[in-house]
Structures are given as structure tokens and as C-alpha cells.
Length: 256
Picture 1 (cartoon, rainbow, N blue to C red):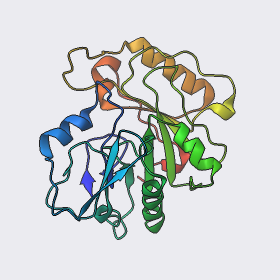
Picture 2 (cartoon, helix red, strand yellow):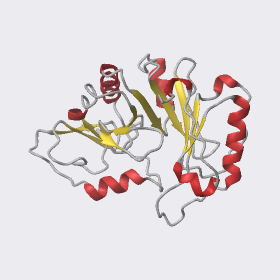
Picture 3 (cartoon, helix red, strand yellow):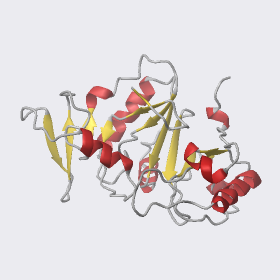
Picture 4 (tube, one colour):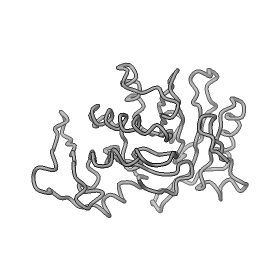
């Protein structure tokens, strides 16, 4: 279990780490490369799986004292799957150091993570991906759980990015980092998420994008018109210049 400074969750949980998206603003890659090291532990604890392309995935069965034993190579850490079974309920960001739904991730890994979630139903689980088509593919195969405590987020750094809309699933947009102004939301309510999170790019990247306040105003106005709760991350504090609006949807409202 890992505590976190992320405003909208209590903890991050990383049974899978690593990613091949290659985003310029990625914080996770830097962390993994800084604190990880490549280790072939004893030739048996790491099994390399050929994904059918030029990419490889490593499956790690033992901790070996290193949270990122293969740096940012996509890795399943089976020893982490049971970490939350006996813990008190909280909001958990699943795989903050990976994209669990990346095209390179085997279905079996995702199914193991879902099974672990179902063994600890006292928590709310929040997933985020840049590959929402994977949600659709899993849903078609009836492998995407329909649970009140499992929320499926789509990263939307710009208005033209795809997102997942589930008729029966809880969905949200993670507009973070916001890199472009957003157009008005579509009129069809069935295609809108249950929740929207928005935040600015952090870090010291050379070409870091600083959003304009008007971009956030547009999103807020659309949310108000469509009764969608909005959560502004603390990274927007200086840009917003007022008390941040940090709303949670009905199923995720915190107990006072």
C-alpha cells in the first residue's frame, strides 16, 4: 500500500508497473528509471513473455527488494495482489505507475487485478488509461466488471482523444495534464462521464504546457450545464486563483 499526494485518491496500488506509451510529460518513467535497476534474479523468478510483437513483458513473482526490478518494462507483481484484502476502505488509484489497459498487457494480468479488487470490496477502485478501446474490448467479452466501486477513467489531454462511455459502468475523464482548450461537450448525455478530473502539467519539462484559466472555465461551465461533478487538482491552484472546486460523484462522496 502506498500513500499518495494525488488529491482524488487515498492510496496508489501498483500490481502492474511499466508502460510503452512514451508520453513526454510522464512522471512515472522517471521514477522507475531512477529507483529501479535491471535484475535477472536467479533465472526462474522472472519469466519473459513474448507478446507477439517486438515488445516483451516481464512477469515478476517475488519482490527481491526492488519496487522496479526491470525499470519501466511492463511487469506483473503478483506479490502485491493481496495487499488490500485486510485494509480499511479507501479510494485507490490502480496502477499509477503503469497503463493497465495498454495494448501490450495480457488479458490474464488484467483479470488477476480485477479478481484481487473483488476480494476486497470495501475499497473504491479508480482505473485510468490512454487506451479506452481496451475497456470496450473487455466489455464486449464480458470481462469488464460492472461494479459500483469500480470506476473506469479515460485520459483526455485534448478534446480529440477517445474515451470510454459505458451504459452500465461508472466512468470518468482525467483531463490531466490539460494541454489544449476543450470544445463544448456533446449534447448526448449518454456519452458523457459520471465525473471529470482536471489538472495542469507538473514537473520541469522544457516544453511544459501552462493551461489558460479560460480552458478550465469552459470545462466548469459544461459540467454545470450537464450536472457532472468536477474535481480540480491542486496543480491548478495558481491558475484558478480561487478556492478549488473538488467535487466527487454520488457513489464516491467522502463521509464527513
